[in-house]
Amino acid sequence: MLFRQLFDEESFTYTYLFGCAETGQAVLLDPVLETMDRDLRVLQALNLRLAYTLETHIHADHVTSARKLKAQTGSRIAGPAMDALPCIDFGVAEDRPLTVGTITLRPLFTPGHTDTHHSYLLTEGDTQRVFTGDALLIDGCGRTDFQNGDSVTLYRSVHEKLFALPNETLIYPAHDYQQRHVSSIAQEKARNPRLGGKSMGEFQEIMANLKLPYPKKMGYAVPANQDCGKCPADLPETIRRLCDPSLQG
Amino acid sequence: MLFRQLFDEESFTYTYLFGCAETGQAVLLDPVLETMDRDLRVLQALNLRLAYTLETHIHADHVTSARKLKAQTGSRIAGPAMDALPCIDFGVAEDRPLTVGTITLRPLFTPGHTDTHHSYLLTEGDTQRVFTGDALLIDGCGRTDFQNGDSVTLYRSVHEKLFALPNETLIYPAHDYQQRHVSSIAQEKARNPRLGGKSMGEFQEIMANLKLPYPKKMGYAVPANQDCGKCPADLPETIRRLCDPSLQG
Image (cartoon, rainbow over the protein chains, first blue to last red):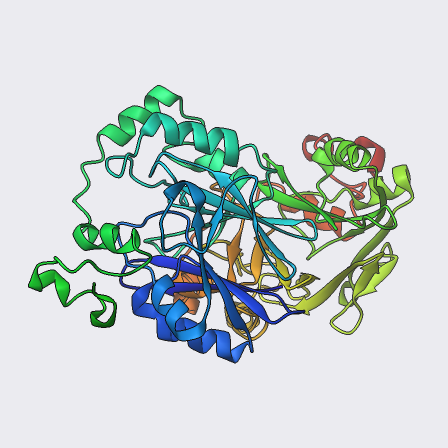
């Protein structure tokens, strides 16, 4: 398996590339519109053909490149089945993993940041990696104050689905704002300031008092991502130019 | 391959366990005298037989359990060949890796913290892990003010041997004092405050001004480790009782 951790400096998003050495097929997890050309160059350099894009959730902080990559490469679009998006080619669920060549991404339903958020578990030999999206970040977690987010639900997702994994399981988040790249289940259990050793009540209080600003792209990113990266036609002109013109409805 | 990251709370040392699923053989990297019974319990729980202990370097902050493990389990003692310790059964070097079943630990000569320090590279599929001992820590590095340490040498080791590895290579250090467990080459290049993006001159100045206290165990740990964990006979009584009584000369 080939594995690359790619970064978008504007939205602090990690896009993950998985390549099957046997079939030459690849998957991109949480690809970002602005870095699509970079992702295509990496695929080409590794001699890989993009088979699928996959999302952890409907993002509010960036627009996915899923639709544009499909148009350019013929890749198929995967995401949580429970989103029931008409633009999705393959809906994943806990009993419906995405398998491409020798790569199997096993979905774990981890709602709380959004109500349909999934993490993905990848096993290579004895090495387990979990791609936690915005459910669990290094020393943090995704916010729970919009998109049907809920702190009680997120606390349960992290403790029941993620902290239940073996200690050595590697954590790869969807974002990091301080250039951290990787953690482990043992590390987050020990020192995550919101979730490590905290009670549900303590977590609820922390999350209720974050006082975060509204994501600047949310107004158009959420509807765009609900259409796999196609910006809606009724955007105001000031926002419209931020969306990919070729993808506008 | 089975892999476990074990921790000694007294010296903040990580001991790493590697197990070959095919032969049932195991290697312990940098095992600590005080946690020997815990390590034996983990080996037993995984149904593994200890084939080798291995050291990154002559430690100053803890005594190795290599000799006592050899006496109890029949394991062999491995360490850097250039230490030329009579107690070592197998001396490793860059052209002389340690192979146990399907596990190969490939030595990288990384002096600077001590003058014979080695890191070890382990490959499982496309996953590379490097065990960096005290050469490179998460957001830090080992001190260079004793045991023939040298900051110019350490700077070269990190840049020429470790930062030359692929970005996704996982870093597992010999210590962490803040419960961090794992990093990556990309992460340390980006944000290690001593080595990431710093010039050799800047690094020399940082290392010359650390003003660290003398390690409390150094007086007996270094001579004990030069005999693979056997404390010398001429220790003062106050220190002598800290050493394992059954191993005293």
